[in-house]
Image 1 (cartoon, rainbow over the protein chains, first blue to last red):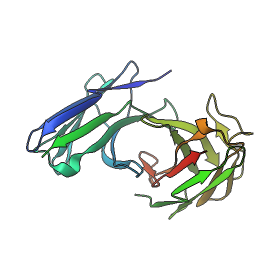
Image 2 (tube, rainbow over the protein chains, first blue to last red):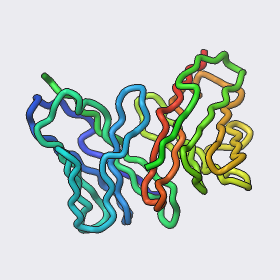
Image 3 (tube, rainbow over the protein chains, first blue to last red):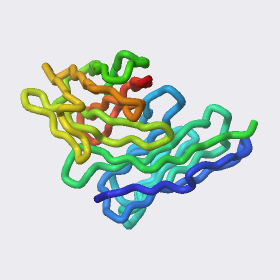
Length: 111
Length: 114
């Protein structure tokens, strides 16, 4: 079945640093979604990507839809303490509106 | 975007009992989805709640354990029945945006079974 693997699994970064994470699959996706989940909360949609090669920003966040359609990348610039949380990628199961989620990247910021 | 409200936000239940989780969406949607997030894990889809027909369950999830109701286009319930400590998880309700190209989530229900 379709699976989404995220890298890195977790990371500590210094406040002010830029962060990069990625999401890869053995299958092609037509949509990539990136979410952030804070402790005790549901995932919040950050960025949606719909086209191969697409680059979309949301404030300090930038995400790209990989050209092969099998990967996506999320960058956070100038990280701040409130960026702490778990970041998930997600994509629709082929031919459906059901989404599968990546393994997650846990971000921890050192002030 | 869709605004989704879930309740309860958390509960502690005795083993062998059941918990029913409610999910309300602020607009009419054809599909609603229920996910489970086990401690430290990612989200796993349990089932699709269809209005006017039975829910569709993913592999590994059965109706007897996770009965779902969908009485109208804005509301759904998930019951987790015959609880055991392994059911301790966060349960999340989701609904698509109006173009069905995005998924929005409620705040989740944190269930602890003792």
